[in-house]
Length: 199
Image (cartoon, rainbow, N blue to C red; front, side, top):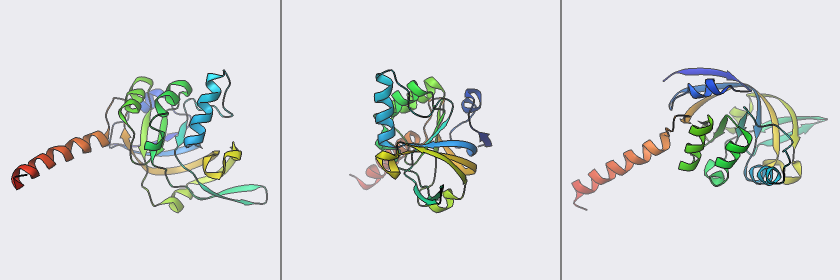
C-alpha cells in the first residue's frame, strides 16, 4: 500500500500507477455530480452538445453537498459521499464520453464500471461516510455552480480542494476492485460456515 498526493487535472499515467488499497489525497478543482448531472450530461452529448464544465482528466465527486451563501460567496457546510451504486447504469458511458479520471464516492460500483475504468484509465476513490462536515473543511473555495436549477444536491459544484482525504483506491485502472474481493471472501467464508453448521 502506497500513499499519493495528486493535483487535478490528473494525468492518465498517475492514475494507472494506483492500486487498490493505496491512499490518495487530492488538491485542485473537483466537480460534484449525482444522478441528474449524469443523465443531463449524457443527453447533451447525444445531441452533440457539451456540459457546462469539461470533465476530461478531472475528478467527479458523487456528492450532494450542503451549501450556504454568505453575500456573493458560497461555502461548503457538509460534503459527504453519495452511494455510488445509484450511478451504476450511467457511469461506464460517462467515463467513456467525458474522460473523467477519478470518481469519489462510497460503496463501490458494478462490473461494467470497473471495466470502463480499466479501459479508459480511471479509478474509484472511496471516502468514509458520516464525515461530511470534516470533508467540507478540505474545500477552501467554491468557484461556481452549474445546473443549480436541478436543486442544490443535484447541481455541479466547482470546488477547490486542499488535501482532500484520506481516500482509498477502491477500484483501480487494472480491473481490480476491493468490493469484488470482499464479496468473494464473504462467499467463501459463508460456504465454510454453512458446512461447519451442517446447513
